[in-house]
Length: 76
Image (tube, rainbow, N blue to C red; front, side):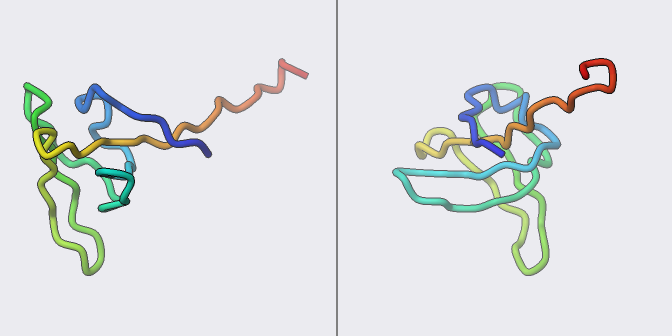
């Protein structure tokens, strides 16, 4: 599974992501909501981690996990 920078935060809605800033992992989680202008998003609460707001202005970057498509039975 590879990580890919997702500059269009709207496309990350509902996906499991990693939030990075200056080479440091800040948080892993699922994107719950994104503003229409892609300026900020919310990561869902998960276990002991509360809901968190992520700001593009702060230099935070969203990375999505890329899963290669499964080979269909017809591809053999």
